[in-house]
Amino acid sequence: MSTKRDYYEVLGLQKNSSQDEIKSQYRKLALKFHPDRNKSPDASEHFKEISEAYAVLSDTEKRKIYDNYGHAGVDGKYSTEDIFQGSKVNFEDIFGSGFESIFENIFGGGGGGFRFGGFDFGFGRERGADLVYDTEITLEDVLRGKKEEIEIPSDIQCSDCKGTGATPGTSMRTCSVCNGHGQVRTSRSSGFSTFVTVQPCNTCRGQGKIIERPCSKCKGSGKQRGKRHFSFEIPAGIETGEYRIKGEGESMSNGVSGDLIVRIKVRPHDKFKRDGADIFYDENISMIDATLGKKLTVPTLEGNEKIDVEAGSQPNTIIKLKGKGVPHQGIRSRGDQYVRLVVNIPKKIDKHQRKLLEELRDNLHQEE
Ligand SMILES: [Zn+2]
Ligand SMILES: [Zn+2]
Image (cartoon, rainbow, N blue to C red; front, side, top):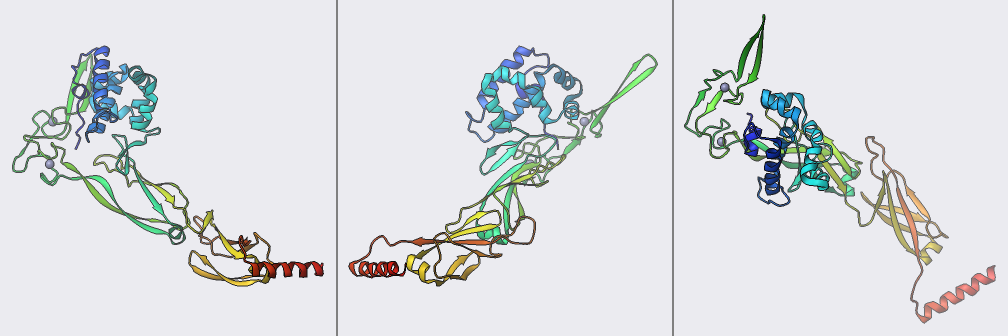
């Protein structure tokens, strides 16, 4: 159900308003509703609405199309990006050099969005907004993959009117202007030709029906904000980054759904470092164990593993545990774990230990 308001109405202007009036009225409203200043929950929506109205009405060509063909004409000719990009100069006029940053924050660079709670809402009429979901996963999750279950903010049927938009118990009447077709035909003769134009009906906004008493909860839109359940699989081997799930963003009743952008951050591990599919681990051993050799157990992402430290191992010796890394992204094989031997030299020794080491030193000198 289209709920797009008339651009002049949005800015509180008359159809014959001059460019100066449009500009000063927008400036007034923009300062009032800019989300940086106005913290009411509707402010962002409102700011977007007045900005779109201004983008169209401040541009001579777009205004002409709007005046003649209404929203259908503008939406048919321009994407939301076209509307804003093409009108950039008009915004600069209003906001001065600060415009760039406002534009980036509110509308995003490439049709992105602004933040609301944990989610980013994009901007667009014909396409639902992209939603951004942030999640942190562990290295163990990278090994096995992880199922995420989330609630996505979404328009759902209004619980009061069950989606009709009319106050429960009241009726809707068929629009008398278009006889319920939602479209109006006008024919105009010029010489020997007759031109017929079909436009969405302005009276019922193309719905064919007129709600006598709009539902007070949803103000006639038939929708309310709610949540929808969505689950998806984070595949094993994933790296920190942004991933797009097509069509799972904000849904539009008469348009294309936006995308869900999942921003995954792999949390640093307290024991392991990761590089691609390989895992790096430091094992501390004593100078004596490095000299004499030792059987050790070291942790891996899947429990402990036995390794043999050979007698005479040098500091920073690397022992490779084949296939103990995480999966390569997109393929089955796994990386390796590298265990580095960090040899600890005792910082404090007692008299007796000192004597033993001195004896050892003398002994080693004799062998040389
Ligand atoms: Zn309702
Ligand atoms: Zn109508």
